[in-house]
Image (cartoon, rainbow, N blue to C red; front, top):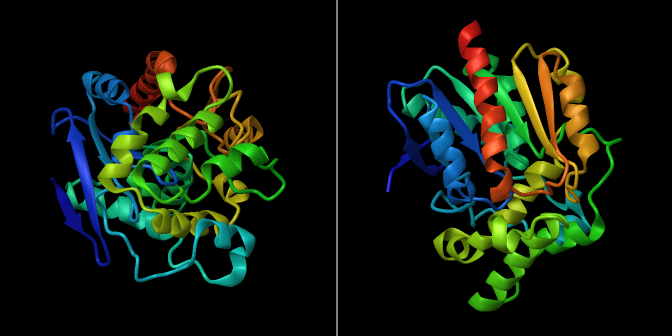
Length: 294
């Protein structure tokens, strides 16, 4: 399985499409792995003439688990986020993404991020704007403190430590996706909940999730900084997102000067199959428009 080492971690990655095509980098969210990117979405982007790279963030999947950096459980992190400094932040995760581009021999890429991955993508665009040809932020936020918070039930269902035992843990993870997936599309049939078993066996880490969560909680607000960012941007958000409510996506689009907002009314915090074709169309239209301009 392909992987490479940065200065501090080993990262697993995958590639799709012809090597000579313009690069697209997909960055996923909290606890997520590269397998959580739906293959139909990847294939549509690759078939449109792009080279797609996905990877596991540190502390997830087949990438390095930093278990020597013990921050306690997810619940202890939430009970007292300031108890311990985050062992890494969004800028470190953005540097991981830039290191992958270096390893692949790419000066930059069209960067697409989901949830925490959208935060990482925003951070990469702010820290290394020359590496980001375009930005697509999906179901994400600027971390501005005045934004409405998550629905408590949804947050507790998803951001919590699974019980001991494989079957119980998988059921817990799948239920978390079901709850944050919203009320219209059942994630167990149409969304990322279906990958709970595969993801658990491949490399789920509750302690890694706690460290990733600290990176999110410790992130500086990005709204004001994004206002000065000159990058073509697409913001995709669900109108039924209980984990990162729609105002967070609206704020992201409002802050980015060169952006377009696409709202999928019935989408929760998920990538449901029935919407993938339309979502891919939005993304490809965005990427193609940037290619014409560059």
